[in-house]
Length: 313
Image (tube, rainbow, N blue to C red; front, side, top):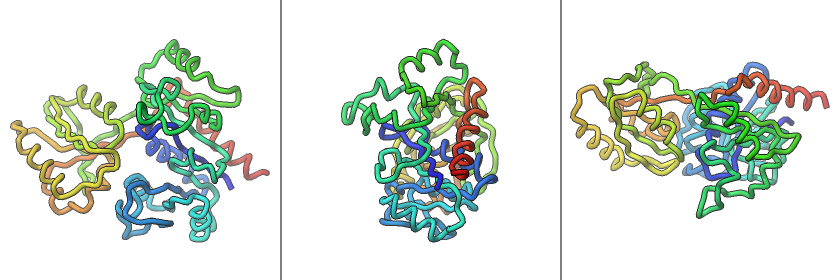
């Protein structure tokens, strides 16, 4: 069946979750789709399918984010992807397409369409292997991808810069190259979805447990009066001590116009502290990929064309 893999060569921070969400939005009204992730840093093992009682501890933060935002799309996790696909199709035999989250290194499965992401500020061609750099896979592995997306570009990236990166990556003739920038949406209050517009009178305490918070930091530098950051490791499981640290640091901000801000991925890991957090001005900021050089329709056509051609075979 059509399998679409979203991955990278590095340990994280290239924008895989927003890319999976972009694919879900693109395909969910055309095909019966599902997502499959490993479920990194969850407290369970083996195959699991999200339901109304599922938490981030059961399936991991990113799959939980998909489940909350797209409740009609089956979201499953499993370390052994091949077995997990079989179980996912047993539970949902009508599925037509499966999106594999972070499965580029999972050689047991050969996806029909591989979408490889690389950060504009840390291109895989210039990166080093762990532990010196962030690479977890051979640079030559990029040749397995049909689509390569340079993420986190400046929104005003020039044609000259585009050509420089194109030359640097030196892709194969069969590979398609795209450039995206991150677009942040309006803030919404955690657990209630009450909207808030960020302005230059607001001071922000940023709570971040993601691989690369720099684009968000840049956003805050441009759109609020000041910000402080409490930084945790990627996929950090928050504890009561962490919550107390957040509260104490927030109370020490002297201005009255102040909020706490976190990412959608971090927000699903704070669900255990809902009662305490509801009393605070705790907000979430969503993010999406936006294709540069008006090439979004070309990307859509490649993905949907892959599925259509697969189904004709």
